Length: 336
Length: 291
Image (cartoon, rainbow over all chains, first blue to last red; front, top):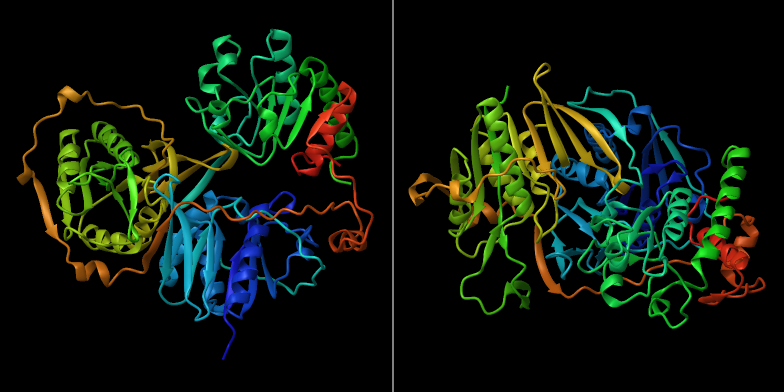
C-alpha cells in the first residue's frame, strides 16, 4: 500500500523560510510518523536561496521549490492554481499550512478546489492508531479548546504560528529538492496595488512585534527621550503603564494593561515598571525584560531577564551599543 | 456599478454570559433561552453596505442561516436600513460546520443577482474565518479578506480594499466585480445610524426558506468531538547558535561540549555590563538580526 503523504506549505521571508514554517515542518514530521507516512514540503517563493538557511536541521522526504517573481505579491489565485496542480500529482493525505494572513486567505479556496475538509487556526493536529485525524483549536475568545475530527482524506489543516516553538533536530539532514517549473500563470482577478510596511511609531500596539514600555520609574522627559531613542534603534513601538499615562507621557491608546491594550510581542522591554497584575495581564510575550531600581519589584518574578539598575544610566549605554551594532551592519552590507 | 449587495450575518452565543462545558458542547449557564447576538464584524459589514447603498443606490439584502432566533438579528438589520432579509431557517438544535453553512448559503445565493458580498472575517466564537472564503470559492468569485478599508473605483468599476498583514503591515488590493470582501474586526467604521431612527419591523417582512437537517448533515465535513479548557502545548525552544560550525552544533545538542554558564535571571552590574547583557539577550533570543 502506498505511504500517506503529509504535505506542508512553507512561506518565504527575507532570510529564507519563516519561523512558522519551521514549526509546521515539526508538526508535519510528527503527523507523518503517526501515519507511518512521508513528509513533503512545498515552498512557493521568489529567488529562493540555495542552500536555504537552517533547513538542514528539519527533516523532510522531499522539498518542492516553486520559484517565480509573482509569489512576491499577495496572490491567492496563483497559490490555489499552482498548489492545486501539485496536489493533483502528489496526492497527499494531509495538507498543512500556517494560519498566517496569506495562509488563511488561500487555504479555504484550495480546499474547495480539491474538495477537502478544512479546519483553520489549530494549535495541534494528530492521528490515532487507526489513522483518524483530530485537530484542536481555540474557540469562544480563547476561553476554550474544541477538538474536531475530520472525515476522510485528503484533509487540510492550518496551524496557528508561535504555538509549538522551534527545536532543531540533532543531526543535519540531506534533502531532495525538486525545482518545479512554473509555466502557466493565469491573470488573477485580484491585483496588488501597494505593499505598505507598518511603522512602529504609529501602528496600533496590538499589532506591534516589539514594544518598549515605560512606567512611573521613568519620571521625566529626559527618561522618555531615552526610551524614544531605544525604540527607534530597536524598531520598537512605545507603550506605557497607567502612571505613565496619568503623568501625560504617553497617550491613552498606548496604555498596556487590563483596562488598556492587550499586546502580543516577541519582546516587551519594561523600563521603570513595577509589574503589578493589571499591567502584566495585558502582556503576552516570550521575552519579558525588566529594568528597575527596586529589586523587590513584582515584575522580576515574571521577567525572563531582570536588570536591577537605573534606566537613566543603562539606556544610554544600551543605545550606544545598538548604534554601533547598526553601523557595523551597514559597513559590512548586512549579512556576512 | 454596484446594484446588489449581499450581507451574510451570523448569530452567535453571547460570550459575555457565563459559558460552561456541557457534555461536548459549550452552553450558557443558567439561562432558559440562550442569549445571542449578531456577530459584531457582520454588523460592520452591514454598516458599510448601507453606506455603499447611499453612494450607488444599491439594494442591500441580508442573509443568515440559523434557527428561529435568527429572526431577531434579521429584524435588526432591516431596521438599520437593509432592503430585504432572507432567513435560511434550520431546525432548532441544528449542527452545521463552516463547509455546510457555506454550501447551503451558496445554493441560495447562486440564484440571486449580486455585485458584492460582505461579511465579517470570522465570528468571535468559532474563530475560523472559513465561511466567507469557502462561499466565495463555491460561487467562484474573487475575494479580499481581513479588510479594514473599502474604496470603490468608479472609473475602472473595480474595488480597492486595504487588508491586514502581520506586524502592522498592510497591502492594498484591487478586485473586479462580483467580489467577496470579509471585514476585519479592526475595520475602520465611518458610518453610523442613530438608534432612534430604527423603524419597527414585523416578522413577515423576512423571507423564509427552510433548510433541513439532511441538507446540513450531508454537506458537513468536520464534527466537534469534545471541548475542554485551554491546555497550552509545551513549547519547544532549544536554541542552536548558528554561528557555530555544523560539528560544534552537533556537539552542543549532544551535550558533550563544555557547558556554557547559564546566565542568572536577575542581573546586577554597571550600566555598561547591563547594556552588554541586554545585547546578548537580544542575540540569544533572535530578536535582532545582529551579526
